[in-house]
Image: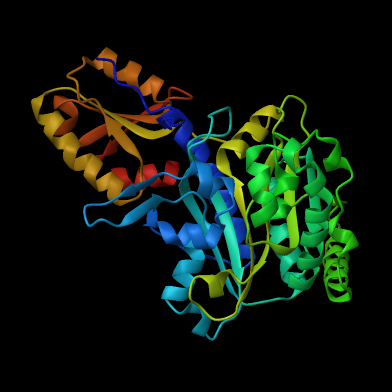
Length: 422
């Protein structure tokens, strides 16, 4: 039998892992500048966390979750998105009681969604996200968007488009909800089965339908911006003003609603406009949510966040031909010839590694020529050569591979000499 990774999953091989490490490191540096702190939540949660936190009418809950019953008869779901888990942790650990507010968090997490796999969109996906809990200041909305844009700029991406919208407060959404029901009801039988249900549960989701996007009624659907009350309009105007003050270009898309039930006020997406990126251009998306903390048992707490797909980030870097700096070189490769030098090599490498020096050797019994070939393949900066004669004299030969220069160094001084050379 030939074993393969499950459909929609992929191995990250050593030659690619360094790329992932690079982008994660750069993103962490950005988060540190914005004074965000990392949070790590479980890979799975009780299913109710996502049903209540994401919303029963979403595609994620209805179609895409990996849900199973554990041996205790509890319904468990592999994490399909990050916000609900972070909010659950915020409530359970009473972070709302912290003296430092708002609570500014970021995470790197694996998500699991049962959807049709395609390039940059997997069933097991990797996501970076942030959540800010405890502030209803529109300046925080602009800061979160700025952080997301900064992550992409830090990688050198240029072909980006920021799209924003407002879903308004509860009063505005209620008025818009009724307008959508009145608008789509005459066309209900022409819509897909999902949209017929959405029209009753969450009509805003009809605007997000992929099947009915070309239906004529979509083009004439009432915009949420027409139903914003004065408070919501002022809030949205402040967010736009802050973005303008920071020099961040944006477009307002009155039809962008996002796919999760908990959003209100600001929503946004960042898209790639690079040629050849593909039909699905979204790189990151998020927005503000009020009521989610209460839904999961906590006090009334405003929040805002976003999720960024790392596979899609790597795709964008590839399409824009941005090189990820990867150092594949090795500090030292130790060539040992003879039984005693082989044993002494173990001690030498142990001591070098304690000093922070990267070093490796042969473990397959290769001859001296084979060991030098291995040093070449590893792109070693220096080769350390230890034979019976060198060991007897308590010296080791140090050869710089770039120049071919070689010198004998006392074993007792090797660590200091290598540190100085590096």
